[in-house]
Length: 143
Image (cartoon, rainbow, N blue to C red; front, side, top):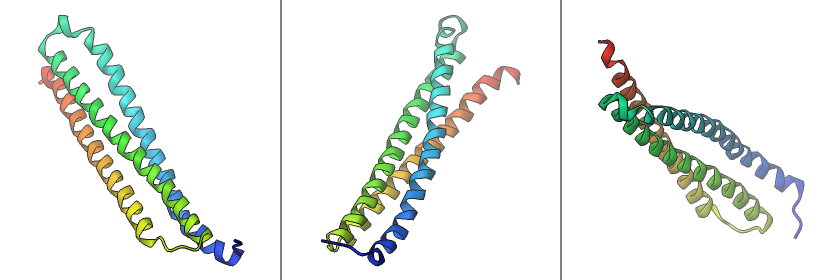
């Protein structure tokens, strides 16, 4: 089976969108992993003070634990979105190379990829809200 350049160029053009999506999600993953690292470092530094400093520190460590769980889920879903997008690109090329109609499969993969990134962003927003809650706890003694 041979495929001509004329047939391949539109597939390459179609694949550019998902490749850009992978790049964007990669930046989002970088942000999420940095936030997770900071939450873990902060929890470790506060956990040593929890026994001596009381309830506020314990409450803040609990929030950091919840944030870490949310970020883990956000990272998992964003990673799944990248994997699904990579599978989408492969499926696009396979459908052209083998000259088979896979529009339904391609659509389903894209929809699942978008659902995963939406879920990831929801968890990410929940993390941001919890970070503000922790800041409020930290600032409370200053009021």
